[in-house]
Image (tube, rainbow, N blue to C red; front, side, top):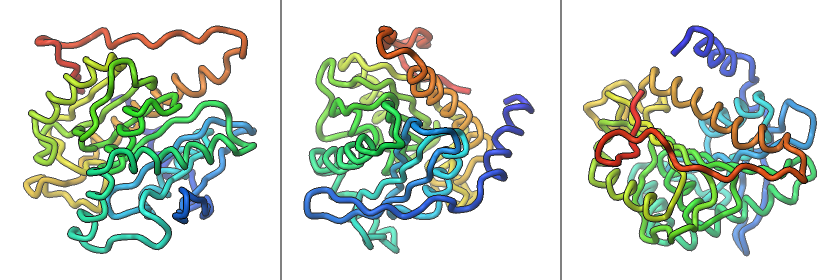
Length: 284
């Protein structure tokens, strides 16, 4: 990574006040949800990026990422998958809560859809909406993509890749970027291979990065620094995956949003640099 890109990442961290956004209550049917909204630093309207939390629910980590995105000119909406006040405190509670949505893709996609609908209704929101997610949130972002949700881009950071409801051919409209820890024991090679097969069959546009030496939760400092535990922070993978994601979002949200309404937007094209064996995997 270039020194310029590294300094740019540090600027994102230091130039954005901690928790500069505000709580946002909204509904999915009868369920009250409490998200977090950070307004764009750019003039309205601005594209919206949904941030989907890890398995312990919406917390300061996702809120800080929302603030960082707002500083880059996006309306950043950290959504709530579980419901107001539902914030698991233990690994066991988190596993049970996350399992509700992993085992019910229809409910998961509906819950993300409620956030998309709210974003579309906002006067400050531009026409382009993306979804990014971390761990469990990455899995949920992919469920939204599989459903054909009206998204301009989807990014998953160290998320699970399997699903109980694989995408139908032609269903995925959004280009997808995956950031995967190459040594993640919770997302083994067989799951990666199954995902690649599913995406190829669906005709999806995928960019897949596997980070050597990185395990699960590699963007989260609270995961510690011992990769032998299966989850640990990896500074290099964190910085590089964020920089790549910012470029990806800019290409698919800001650049397209700037095009005249009557100008035809380019159709998505499949990834053109797969290594041998028709793998979609790319490494840094």
